[in-house]
Image (cartoon, rainbow, N blue to C red):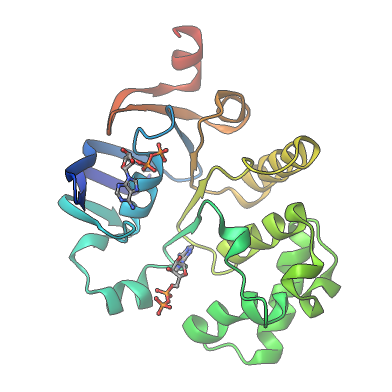
Length: 244
Ligand code: ADP
Ligand code: ADP
């Protein structure tokens, strides 16, 4: 069954040098428990597409056209407040590039992972911390990490925590943007293995954005290749890797 339907999406950046059409004519469907890899060289629009699916391209970007349907809701028709309440974290959750640096240095990892549960799901603090511990274990971290501050974690540990945070509300669709990039090589392999395990055990409906075709080859069921803002090829992994 289809969990996400993107239709004719177009996103522009308005810059002093004019309008950049970063994403255009993008349509695809994501099936339940399927991993769609989005590949393409740097600057082709992958990250912009990820953010646009959540209805929040980075400024000065704006989605100018299209629809993004998840669980029968058109994400792009909601107000910002409504999107925060109903879509972000719960329906679509993204590990964005640089998310490991977005932790607030003054709060513990436990407090920061507990927040979406408290805000969106009415958990008490105590209940939330219990669920956070569960999710830390799931991503291969010691549950005691709840008491640690971000600077006490290595890059790889932070990436695991970020993945736990993105999955904690059990989103319908999980997006990971370059989840293994900017980590050292050994840690890249560990995070890749974690995502393979999660794919198998949590049966994620998952969009994997990366310039790294070897990561796509390991994880994706289907592959979309982007070039200059649009999807130029879309097929099963077998089709894409047999006809390069
Ligand atoms: P990718 O993720 O494939 O590297 P991006 O989505 O980051 O591609 O970028 C797509 C295009 O949009 C590029 O031409 C890039 O320069 C431009 N772009 C990205 N972010 C911004 C921004 N905040 N302001 C202006 N242009 C941007
Ligand atoms: P604020 O009121 O501070 O804007 P938001 O809930 O909109 O709070 O989000 C703050 C930041 O958290 C966003 O800019 C975004 O980077 C990140 N964020 C929000 N929702 C998600 C999500 N579902 N997945 C990943 N990151 C998110």
